[in-house]
Image 1 (cartoon, rainbow, N blue to C red):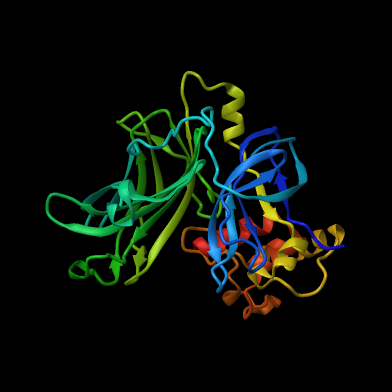
Image 2 (cartoon, one colour; image 1 turned 45 degrees about the vertical axis):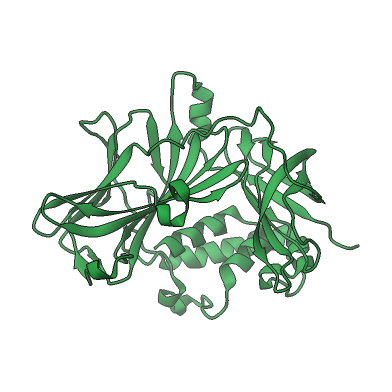
Amino acid sequence: MEPRAAIEVHHQGALPWSGIVPVSIPWPQGGHAELHRVGIAGEVVPCEPFLRWPDGSVAVVRAWPRLRLDAGSRTTLAVRALEGAYASASDEGVWYFDTPLPMHTVLVDPWGARFRAEFVPDEERGEGGLLLDSPRSRVRCFRSRHTNADSTNLGLRAYLRSWRGERRASLTVLLDNDPTDEASVLGPMRFREFRLCTTDPLLRVLPRFRDEDALAPPQRNVHGGFDQVLLAPSDQHYLGDRTAKAFRFELFLDGDAVSEVERRQAAQPRPLALPACSWVRRTRAFGAQGGPAPSEPQAAEWTRELLGRHRSSAGYGPWADRGDPAFAAVQGTRRNEPLPLRDVLRCQSPELLRMFEARFLQ
């Protein structure tokens, strides 16, 4: 039987989920010149082409279905391609993160001088820093430099992904030594400390990899917000020329209208949606053809094996290797194939995706 377009949705949280679950969906070459809406779970869902085949047809779209999921569930949902443009409904909700971000970063150099960087929209990437402006999802880019009254230091780069009608957002922050201004290239740099500071007591910031980065709990600051030390005081911090150090966070905007259930839901991981392995093979996207997909018991065993290899060689701390295959050859980790995405799709594993995300951010 010919595979049909479908996605697998994994919700590992202890509470039910109701909200947007982003997903990337591949399509066969030549199938669609344009595609801006799909049908998922009885709903017309907006989507945007993300990758195209050499002939210009749509290869992968990003879609944003609103789903209701039971706690600890795994659900298979059919996907239908729909012609025409998506028409936003009036009840889609507001954008909670369109205002300036109430946060900044602080960098301390080896001599104790403090530098501050604001989250300034990168207008070179688009008006207001917008990289993506879709009916249900926006991605904004920020870029600035750490400065004080006397001089400038390393840069700050950040990417904020928000969803319409949701108080949650995802933020990636980079301490950046790759400036766009060639006249201000600093070369390899040492520094002593780096922290993220919020100024709004209602903004909750949850580091994605707190254990891997060995982060201490945040401390209340004089602005009413919190200080999260990302790189604790040390004489060993170093950032090479044209490199950056990345951190990822989940944001939640609290308020008087927010219930305790919503707060508890915000503390659990967002569900993960992946295209079904059989459909990916049918489309020939991602180079993930190969042999038959493993059965669920085989996939579970394979996942345990890969996670075991990772954990046997992973380090913890902000500069640790986290099980990078380059440092793990002794236990047989393969190094010369584009394995992570293939393994995640074949095993349909949120645990593997989280492991590889932590590795790549390092």
